[in-house]
Amino acid sequence: MALQPKFSIITITFNAADAIEPTLNSVKEQTYRNYEYLLIDGGSSDGTVEKAKASGIGFAHIVSERDNGLYDAMNKGMALATGDYLCFLNAGDAFHAPDTLQTIVDAIAGEKELPHVLYGETAEVDEERNFVRMRRLKAPEVLTWRSFKDGMLVCHQAFYARRDIAPMYNLEYRLSSDVDWCIRVMKASSKLVNVNATVVDYLQNGLSLQHHRASLIERFKVMSRHYGLLPTVGRHIWFVLRAVIKR
Image (cartoon, rainbow, N blue to C red; front, side):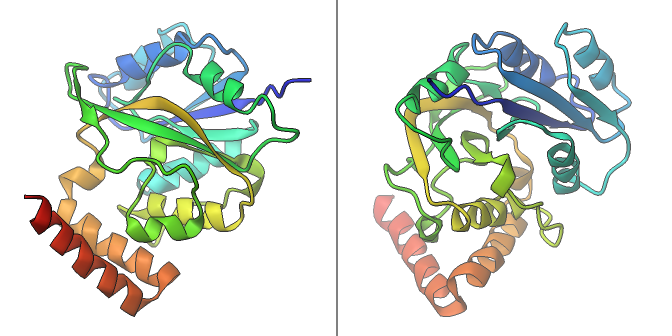
């Protein structure tokens, strides 16, 4: 019998009324229907929650209250989720196509049990939803926790973790806890599957982009914790040289 996993799609918002519509539409248009949708809002005052409620989507949960930041909100969503896989789709991001979830399910049709991680490619779009480019780092065919030594090879929104192995986000990190989370998920995983498809359209205005330098410093701390200080220093020297060579 073919696997029919349930996806917990979690959207984190705060005053995102201007950005959330493409996200809502992409969820509503999915042809694969075995999912639940959770909106975790930080107490918006711009009509974000009202717009979500008016979308016609049957939300599993809508929570709107003050939180302690993005990753605290993600932890709230995880605590409420009941699906097999966690899918974080933030306001402004969208599934790449109406059959994205079905494509992911088809990719594991031959599996006897649900893989620990499913992952794919990311397309970057602008605020008008125009395609800009594919994400610079390509998802590798074989992915392990050591793979992120070369950077975050898979976008967080294109990385679906099985809920039963997923830890809570570390609130010590304000901008790069998603990197730490993905690494910890992969450390607990033995089966990771590249679905060989573009799964998400990523809006180019994320929190880490808005605070780029602080994000890079925090990401260095994450990588040092998992891979060791000296190897991380050496790797970052290579990153700089690589960027210069490619200019």
